[in-house]
Image (cartoon, rainbow, N blue to C red; front, side, top):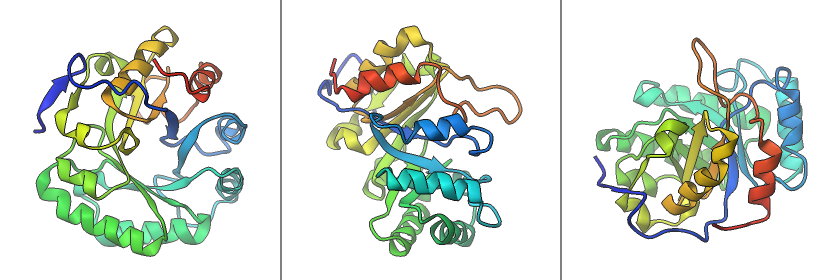
Length: 249
């Protein structure tokens, strides 16, 4: 396990400029307002994950094609969603999905969801990332660990998701000491179930822990197939105005 230090110690990254990474809204037919909001000017978007049907689907989807095209025309990076299943999915399956994302949606890179964290799995993840970079020029690669992985993963990807979970955990979370060796642009935090009243506190935590890409939502994780990332937070306009002005705590 990486060595951890509490948020109350270490060096504070108070000058971190934050922006959004969108983990993946529901299908544009289900969440049209969410997708249209993303192309409004003023939102500091780092990238948006396109998850058609737990991956690229079996055939090009016209609604996803339109949504991805609007984002690219607005200068926003679109990433294809690849579910690594903590190492259970085969290399060939992942590469096949990547090819479909590139052929159909002209994505700018990939988000590897449920990425392993342990040292033993690193060579296979590195092999996958190397192949993805060969397929897509200037590919942006995000490894969706959801927690701090073995430090070597930071050398393979453009960004790591080092926190993904509920606000009840995030507000007491710790940051691995090795992350201080990298700039904030390398790390992402995704927090669900976060009440509007704690927005300032959450922004301070992200800056302090050195994560420049965030997504905070008041949506909660429910039973069954409920996904807190599939819809926009009720305070979207408020958080856009806070981050868009570049105010630092």
